[in-house]
Amino acid sequence: MWKKDIESVEEMEALAAEIGSYLKPPDVLTLEGDLGAGKTTFSKALAKSIGVNRTVSSPTFTIIKQYEGNYPLNHLDVYRLAGSEEDLGWDELFYGDAISIVEWAQFIQDELPEERLEMMIRQTGSTTRTVELTPKGDRFTHICEEIFR
Image 1: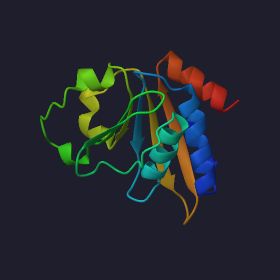
Image 2 (image 1 turned 180 degrees about the horizontal axis):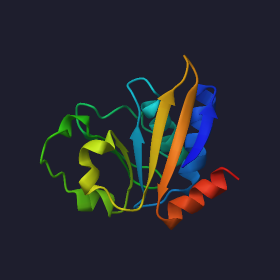
Image 3 (image 1 turned 60 degrees about the vertical axis):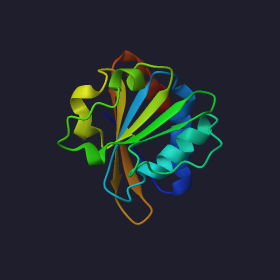
Image 4 (image 1 turned 180 degrees about the vertical axis):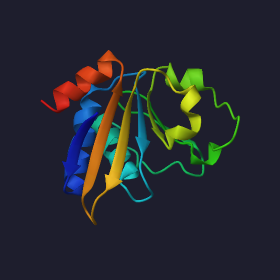
């Protein structure tokens, strides 16, 4: 696990842009954190870093939003799927031609690809956060090594 203390929105956006610079389809990034921790802020900045020009918002009520940029981007909020057997076409989403960001991924743990980058955002103050990155697989370990060197 790799940890980084974030002191501002700008630092969160910079981290998202740096991570985004390494991602390519069909990479999957999972985001965990309490409400207000910064998941949507991170997602917006990551989307911008891969060329998404549309306004990115949390897909809480739609479960999934898709965007076009340099790569297609799937932004999922699977909180409402807790305890559900719903299949949204996981193979197409996670092994297709898009990068996927999954918020509240613990609710679909069995559907996630083995190789992914897990991210936990913990609120430590009104503007401060601690970000923990847990790479699953060699590719994501290499990304973390590059970011934290």
